[in-house]
Image (cartoon, rainbow, N blue to C red; front, top):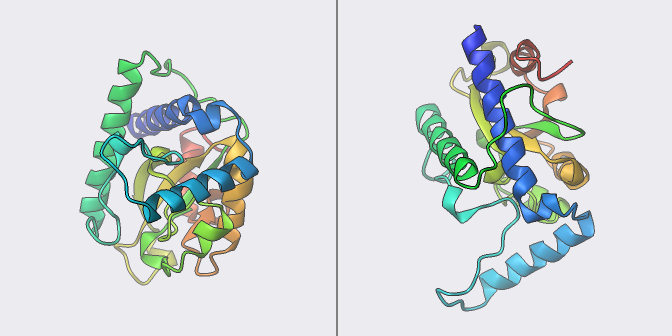
Length: 211
């Protein structure tokens, strides 16, 4: 890895952390109980007729950033990588538009954590969704506002060299509910980065984002 790649990763992480910090659920330090309440609102919203003027309900799922579905639409590594690149560009644009773009330098990670999502390992059972009170989707996907980058899985850890991980960021006040979702996924579609692919750990350490 060269310095340019490390700088790019740091910038992408800084953008993700800054964007999440601006969102009401994170900005207001909402609790797991608040999350469960919002999840119920989302469920009720899906079950009830809506008009075009009704506001959408979502947790770190900004409609303007919504990417293609990683299991039904963007199914190849290239398509998924492009989807995440487009999301990141849109997020950076909105940060600048709102005068919230982070200053250059090391990201302020605090007690938030990096998470890996492997779409092709998802059982699509909805177990992570239920356990996390809606933080994860029924496909085990973390909310797209938190997505950072797509990386290939180390060839030594999979028989499929095209397998990939989505690296995402979990804000500090949502780590507890995210951990419940991770523990509900025995197929390991979700893993904390410390327990995941050594190549990703090396990538983050080289960029100065992990000890």
